[in-house]
Each structure stands twice: as structure tokens, then as C-alpha cells.
Length: 185
Image (cartoon, rainbow, N blue to C red):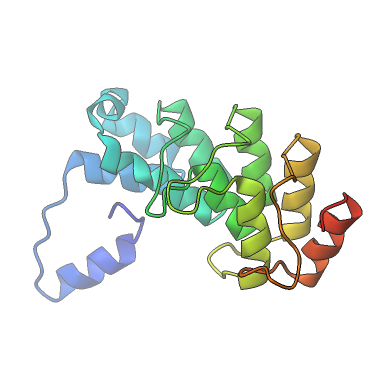
């Protein structure tokens, strides 16, 4: 339910499962699905009952390029610097996924452009470089070049990026070319 997989929940119920679904589960599902009417119906006080593990829904939505969901969660009071499984913020994972619209929105809302994840000590510009090479498929309209350009134009530091042959996680050819045009070697 927290991941917005309502159809899976219904399938389980049709086979006899009796999952315990709380109002917080319903609220997080509404957040994930950008269902503002359901969020209002459940009540604004639920946002105040959330804890750190609940806020991870923000990072998961950003990883999928769900900009409207991210907007609703930030409006509901979710902390913009919430961290996910790899210690990355919503800006990190949206960058990795190549979600230009989510990255732009998060920057407009004040996300820290130079925030470092807690696993690799990397910034969002490094995550877009790596994501462009990996091509994750969880964001339907990925555009790593546009995402990298947004981060660069917002002032992302390029000093620590490595595009050389010894780079463990190379960028895609297009992102590599863009970064080189800004002087990265």
C-alpha cells in the first residue's frame, strides 16, 4: 500500500489475505499516487504522525520521476533532505533516474545541490553521471542530458567528477560529451 500498489493489495485480498492497512498506509499510498483528494480526506494531521521510515516514500517517488507526488509530499511537510536506502536524497535518486522535471522542482524547493549521499559520499551530479551509464528503467521519461544540464546550470560543482578510462562507473556517451563540454576530464 505504501508503494502505491493498490492492485497488488486487492489481488492478495482476493486470495484470502487479510492485510492490516492503517490510515497512515492509506495516506502514504495517496501521497505516492498524487491523490490530493484522498490526502485531504484522510486529514492533514496524519502528516504529523509520520516518522523517518515513512518519509522514504518521498525518495521512492522521486526515483520514479513522480514530480506531482513529490510536490504533494513536500507540501504536506515531508523533509526535503529525507534519505533513502543508499543514503541519497530525493535529489540524488531523481538525478540517477534522469528525471529532469523532478530535479528542477526539487532545486526550486531548495534541495541541497551539493548534498552527499551516506554510502559513496557523492553529489547529485555524480548520481546523474552514473545513472546515465546504468540506464535504470524505473522512470518512464528519463533524460540524463537534460538532468545534468539542470544541475550544472544550478551551480553543481564538477571538480570531483572523473570521466577518465579508470572511472569505475562511466557516464553514457551523451552525458560524457556534455560534461566534457564543461571542462570535466
